[in-house]
Image 1 (cartoon, rainbow, N blue to C red):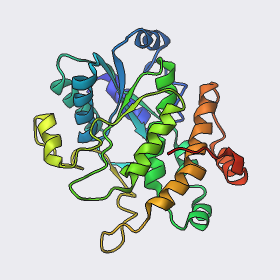
Image 2: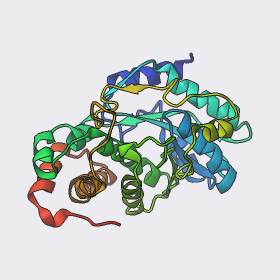
Image 3: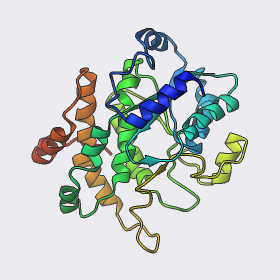
Image 4: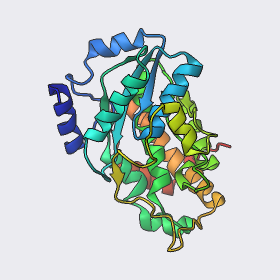
Length: 286
């Protein structure tokens, strides 16, 4: 493992506030300027196999010539860091004619905490349920928006899918995916879901050209599956998810991103409290 990837590993371990103020060794000004001059650039959200497959489809359908892989940390991950760099290598191997730039690692645990941790009791009281997973995926897209805007409102590619071989993933329902894309649209950033309507995992493996089972060889989450009952059923309704997103998560993420866009570090927790106390901050979408 080279020096750069060792520094990324340490950066991931420490999980510092890193949304707009990137270390110079990771994203120097001259590199950001060069990215802004690249018309075929897209940001790729690196996670597991679906993110790599999404990049393959996006290059095929949209003609991207340059991909900037990004990993966003949350604070709930566990597993070997090697799985992230291995996913980037697989992206290189699968797209040999595409320029794959150096991995960027970013995140804000305080942003995640404001959306998914600090106000759990309030969220349960107001909406009758709580799961961090919907807000977590909103965060994963939102935390990349300032970078996408800085680089010229470049597209962001993600591996979200509505269907998973018949299984329901509450953070990837139609309601949730529409919200994520609507948030990106408010900043004029195209958030692309090339795999959105693919159901079968075998089709993902066909796109990749090699075996890679869902959930394997990627970082795990300590909160995985929290929204399922003892019988593996999901009892949270789309209506409740829509209300939670419309009234809390969407406007909070929007205000946090707006603050980042002003080159300021938000008071994430205070903004979350203000959303609850100020109903006119609510933003409506589909």
